[in-house]
Image (cartoon, rainbow, N blue to C red):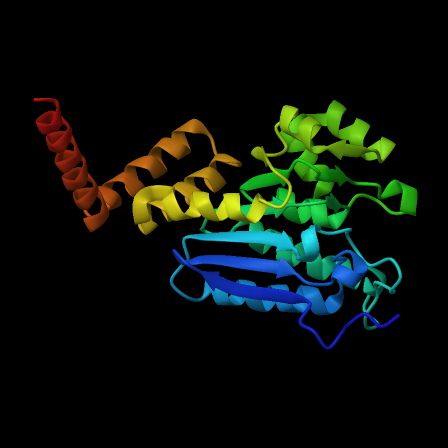
Length: 267
């Protein structure tokens, strides 16, 4: 089976309200990742990193399915390097780290299923909006390999060692409802509505305050590794920058106008 196809394996689109939507586009193969898909994902991240940030990035899979991980029907090796047999994984690891560190909010809009490294991609996002039919799993051991894409790291940080171990060693499937109860997804939406719900959030998020959105994302990223004192220091620096900018002034004026209108209406 050929790994690539004439069609782009990843679609990049800018939609209204300046929201980027990246779609994994190998529906015939359940959107499993390939070398070509990783390369196209890298190009999409180049575009996001090297220009004025968009308001939000949404990740989704074509034809109502997020992704089934790596394409096990195609060898994951490339070249003759010391780690050639895992070269596709190493490429994916770089992509996941870049996705995780993007200075904009990211949402994985998961329909159908997210398994293996596709689940790791979703967990690298800030939020996961899961359709009620979504399922998640990390059945690496069943395929004779270790958990990859950072799945052990993401699950351990979010669930603790005991619950992460149970999911990884059992290789079982986690339903959308259980994922919500475990704090692994942000919200559950109706089947077919995950992208629309993510776009709706992006359209109203921050009332267009790009700088405060970006700085808030940077605070969240710093909170993963820093202590409270370091976070407070960043709050002061970012807060000073925001107070000196146009966004805070416009927000205050808009608040005053709304308050005055409400007061007048109540008279």
